[in-house]
Image (cartoon, rainbow, N blue to C red; front, side, top):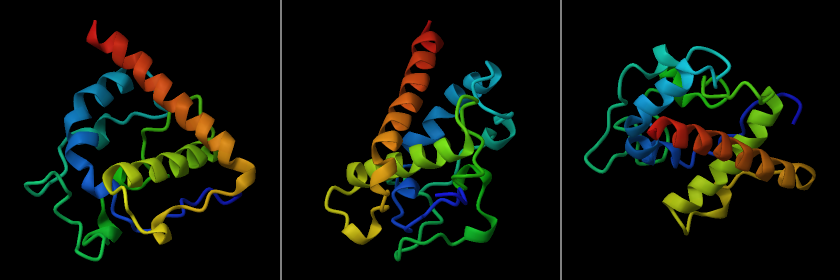
Length: 149
């Protein structure tokens, strides 16, 4: 994957996870940003909660799993442009970690999601992608433990 373009399958999983994944973690991400965990200043991208429906799904998610405001969606919704990339990740590592985490999220949100939505991660990067995902979670969990103190 040389072009670092995220192979979004338009499954809608990230849009169904807005309240618990973004809106409930705004303060956490701001604190992490203040401590320099991320590559760039993310505070401006996290100033407001994303609009949701009663079930916590983004209000812009359409029935066909596409986004009603795709071209003007917030930066936080643009995976490879999103500013939550830790400094310790290269762009390619961030891509691979996100591909793996996206597939995990799909199954968590919708256990019987059709296979056509799963990202086809090349065999040669599957294990690396999993390890990078684990690395990201470890970084966030370590910070979370310090954040609670």
